[in-house]
Image (tube, rainbow, N blue to C red; front, top):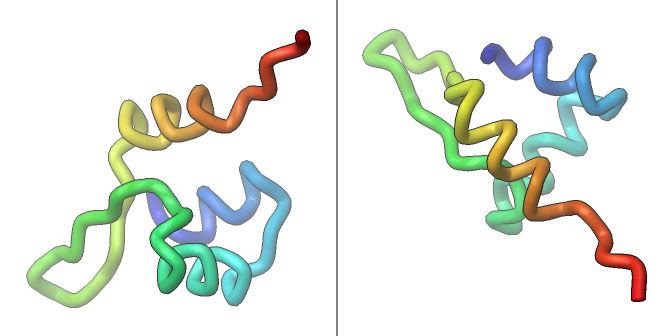
Length: 56
C-alpha cells in the first residue's frame, strides 16, 4: 500500500500517519530504494486487528 492509500482507508491526514510513524504507532513500513514508503497489505491488516477493542 502507498501512504495515500493507507490514509484514505483510515480517513486520516498524511501528517497524522507520519506522527504515528514517529511514535512507532503506525504499521511496519518498508522504504524502497527510490525513497518511497510502502506498507504490506498483510502487515496492515494484522495491525488493524491489534486495534480492535475487546468488549468486556
